[in-house]
Length: 390
Image (cartoon, rainbow, N blue to C red; front, side):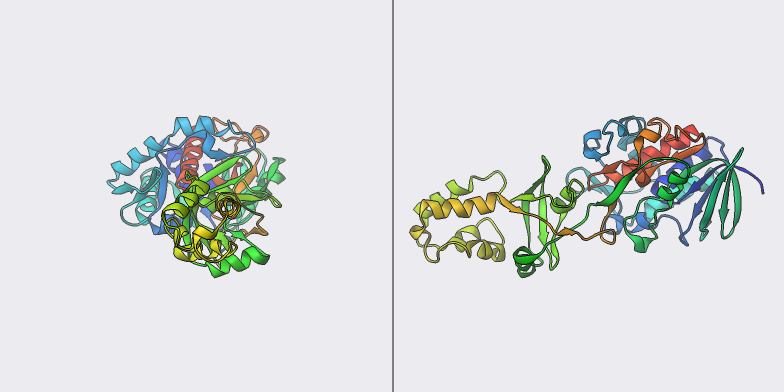
């Protein structure tokens, strides 16, 4: 059994980046992946076009028990560094919205780029191999159902619990615990909400309708579109706020951000007195949504509505408070919030402070980015830092 300098568990975004960088530095690296092929999540990301980073990367757009932990990695390997790599491989890309960068073609281009870099760096890739145990004496011994490996260093890059059908498991957390590392309890992030009762019935009646909104929870808010579904609420604004939501929290929805709804309705009562409230609201909202939100107001022309009735209608539009029953769980979550406690790791190298030679990167770490390429950038940055340090 010829030893490697590093064995990397997981051939996703972070693992591929780590292996590439370590190999470029002359380290003998092996990627061990339990799926039959590498980069499964890369291929499905961004609707198959891979939202590979964001022009607005900043530490405050990441969630962690220690909000300062991600600063070192993000500054040492930035979005600009990854964009330069993409451009060197002549992969065409475009900015969509809010700084999100997507491939013009397929996400396959990003995966092929990483695999090409790994080939040049002489990284060995072993797919379809399930790790059954990792032990450490002088070196690490990694047992798999396709044979054993020895390595001076081990990198846990197997991600979190999101999207089990893509092969997500608790492997990184279980292994970290066995080596004495603390875990911040994982929970689903970037995930739709499930509603119940009257709110669920409303959502079902509006299933498929989307609208721009400001959604807030725990002193954090996002202005993007929300989507009504037959189970509750989804869409970018909901996915974003879900990473900050905890069981039992209420969320607040402003369906008319930056508009004084009460003043608007009073103005329309003066200028369009014969119109119904649902007709007035349809100037600003999708027709089905306008009709639903007008149902609680007295019927008839807006001229017949009192100041109090207009104020109540405006309040519902601007401050719609509701409490989700739950999220849709790991099967629909795009990321995991929580993971290996950053207090256990060096922010510069991603190496365990307790176990020399053990590194944790990517989604397995308690660092979670916003929707829109942030989590890929964390994978590139943390993977690069470990690859440079090994």
